[in-house]
Amino acid sequence: MNEVGSVLVDTNVVVAYFRGDTGLRPQFDGPTTLCLPWVVLGELHFGAQRAQRRQEQFTYIQDLLKYAVVLFADQETTEVYGVVKAELAELGKPIPDNDLWIAAMARQFDLPLATRDSHFSHVPGLKTLFW
Image (tube, helix red, strand yellow):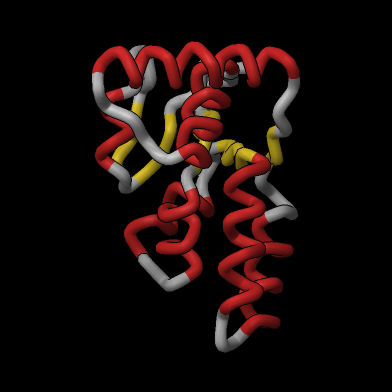
């Protein structure tokens, strides 16, 4: 994949955008192609289910899906997941499983990951953008 300008986005970046972080507007409204891992979409739906203003959150998700590209796991993703988890275990730097899936997709598709979680910096070969 690795189209110029494509970025994989983590849940915390999307949530910050939904909450009105104006610093993210250029990235979300600009020419950047936002790629959304399936696990991030699941986390967004979980958050919407628990939100006080559920319908508003579901509307945000639906609007995001009009321009974001959702990436789904395949066999290669599972193989990369295993490699990343083993690398982090060897380093003594485990991260949450959902974040492992996100990191695996970023490596699989050779995409930079826009996140606010510093633990992604421990993943070998992963380019992170701290939005």
